[in-house]
Image 1 (cartoon, protein in one colour):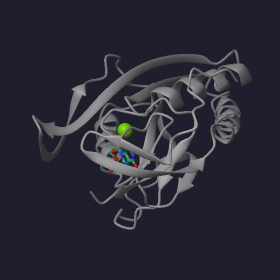
Image 2 (cartoon, rainbow, N blue to C red):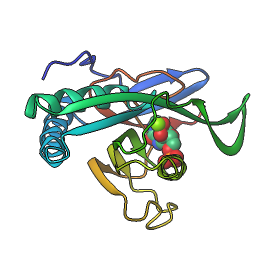
Image 3 (cartoon, protein in one colour):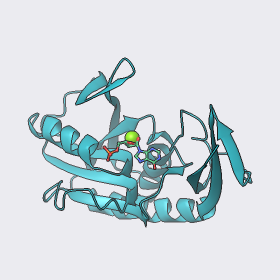
Image 4 (cartoon, rainbow, N blue to C red):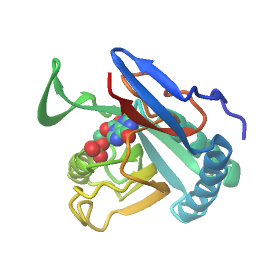
Length: 203
Ligand code: IMP
Ligand code: MG
């Protein structure tokens, strides 16, 4: 699979704004591409009966994952009818976290009776996806499933938060802050091919 991502050797220490972090490679880019290819094949055959899929990408983090996934799905099943849209969700008003989620950019395509696949970068507290699932459920899609690149083992996440929603997961990772493959720290480092953990270094 071709990719637009940068295959960098990330320095062992990086500074972003006023913060310095130690970095540690967690998942190499090649391993991500292999896994996403397999997910794409699995999803292509899963949606073959339904004949169509409406892919909603949660921006900005899922940008690379969604683009790789859709390419793999179509390579595996060129007959699949694929439509797409993107949303942006924010929990902030100004610079203050309000704790209340809202669309910074709302869906533009009606999902009623569509086979919806929501594509997100990471599942952490799960609150973003929970909120999105509730919103989409009310719009009566024909079916709704989730694809996430990484599932963070966050012990504070309420078990069964997303109920019986079918979830397709790339990797499960420890409860650490990560960057790369769409994931950012203050909007930087999204375009790394691999995923790295960040540990703050005391100033
Ligand atoms: P939630 O806590 O599951 O609602 O995740 C909210 C959002 O926080 C995710 O969609 C990511 O954009 C972001 N996020 C969570 N964990 C990380 C991380 O380790 N690195 C970068 N972004 C993260
Ligand atoms: Mg996100």
